[in-house]
Length: 376
Image: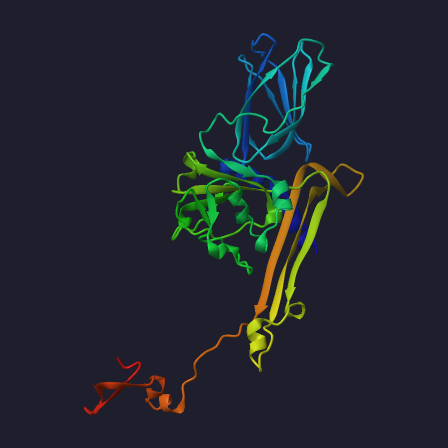
C-alpha cells in the first residue's frame, strides 16, 4: 500500500514536467494570440497589463505590453478565454468570450477608451475572434460541439473531416464494423489517401514505413481538430495531400465524465434473406459491444506542512482520462465447393459441361474424344 502511494505521488510530481514537455513539442496543437494595445487615436499604450483567462480552468496568463504596445501569447491550449486589458488612464477592456482554435494564430488590436481603470468596457464579439494573418494555410475547424452533435458510424471521428470542402473518404472507411486504424481513409483535394498526415497534440500518427495513419482518436477525447487543405506551413511538410490536426481535451475546475455503450446483438436482429432461403440456415452470430467513458477534473494533492485537510484540490493541475473498447464476435455463412470422390482421385470430369458435337480433343492417353464445355 505504501509503495502504491509513493508511485502515485511520483506520478503527480512528474505530471507538470510531462505537460511542459508536451507543450514544447506540440506547436501545431496550440494557438497563438498577438496584438497591440492602442488609445483612441491609434497610438501605442506601453505598460498595459493583458490578462488571458481560460474559462474552464480559471488559469491566467499575463503579459505587459512593450514600448510599441505589443503583446504575444504563445502555446495557448485551444478553448474559450476571457481577455482583460488594464492601463493607467484608461477604462478596463473586458472581452468575456474569446474562442481560440487549434493551430490558429490571430492578430487582435485592442482600442482602449480613456477613463478610470475601475470602469469596464465589455466587448461582445462574434467568433472567430480575429483574422489568422500569421499563416497562409487554408482549411477549417471542427469544434467540440459538432463532434458531440453529429452522428458517427462506428465512432469514426475522421468522417467529420468531410465537412471541409475538398475532403472525401474512402469506401472502406464507412463500414459498420470499425477498427482502430485509419489507414487509407481521407483524401484531401484529390490527393492519395496515403498522403494525408494526422497529428494528435503535435505528435504525428503516420507510420514511417508506408505513411498509413496508425490510430484513430476517440471522439470523446477530441476537443477540436483542424483540417489543413492547402498552403500549409513547414510543420506539415511530411504530407503531399493535407493534414488533420487534433487537439485533445483537458480537465477543468469541476469533475465531469461520461459513459457510453453501443450494442448490436443477433437476438435483436431479423433472419437474413439467405438464412431464410436455406432450410438448414442458422442465424449468424453477432456480438458487438463498443463501450467506454471519460473523466476529467482537478487534481487533489496532499497538503504537506500546511495543516488542515490531508488532501486538497489544486487550482493549477487538472487531469483527463478517456477509455474506449471494441469487442466483436461474429460468424458469417459462406458457400464453398467440396470435392467429390472422383475429384479426390484426380478425375475432374464432373466439372465439365455438355458434349460439343463435331469437336474432338486428345485425352492424356492420346485418344480422340468428344470435347465438352470447359475443355476448350
